[in-house]
Length: 372
Image (cartoon, rainbow, N blue to C red):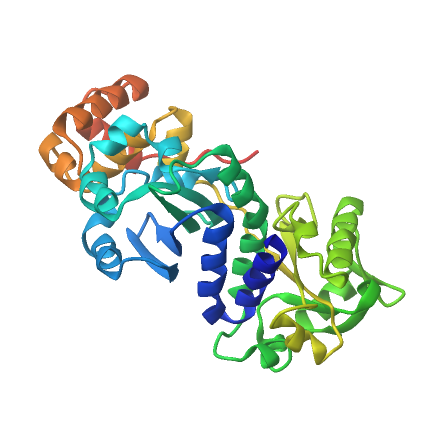
């Protein structure tokens, strides 16, 4: 069941119409009644569902039209490191969750008992998120559900990262041939034993440079020993169609240098719809290499870490940049005035401020510490 699910996830990287099947099988494997793959941006206060399984269209529409600003896990949830499994109660205490309008008016009416959450990718202010929702028949997320989710998360991360590189208007058969040279990443198509069978222009330049990847006797090799070992393990797994064997990490770090954060992602091409794409070049795997630019955390996340702020305190601090006054904050966040007052008092105590205007100045004037 796990192997078939992982295959579906990788197929969806080439053909986004297959995400519905991947999400359905993810629910069956982890234990859930519905699932959504979406992105959320704190800075622009926007969010969008990319792919959904078994959602209620009415409540989905209500979420984006009305309840998104009241979701108590944001913005704190966007600070969670990619790949870590969490639930709403890991971010906000249950007592506080249950008293919000979001829970009473959006969560409870749908019969949602709990949610398995994970940030697949995390940018400076945004993140792509996988949610698997559990109804009362599944109950609260337990250790077994977290463990099952952890088995598929690295594959979701690879598929999402790889899928964004493609021109999705092309079919799976064309995506690794006609559009290969137009993708803004170094792409290597590999045959048995890591033999290089096709590269695009960016990949050829990377081989010529030789700083991170090299060609050894016609095969692709990573310069860093640990990166080379990880690459070989994933390629062996791809050749044998043992997709679950590649679950130890979502990306292969090719360099430890902060100035050269390059990562390789491996897409097996030995089964499913991907096999048709790889057959053109007799390839068993595609390796995608891209650079992640180092970025400092945004002021809100940095302040949250410096002052050890809770999710509720982060929400109030964020809300102060939009409205003023306890009542206005309570309306914006869908919380009670008592809860807002408690968070404000804690913010004053932790930051050494005395007024709401001081908190606004603290956030607006915050300068990120420079990296040494």
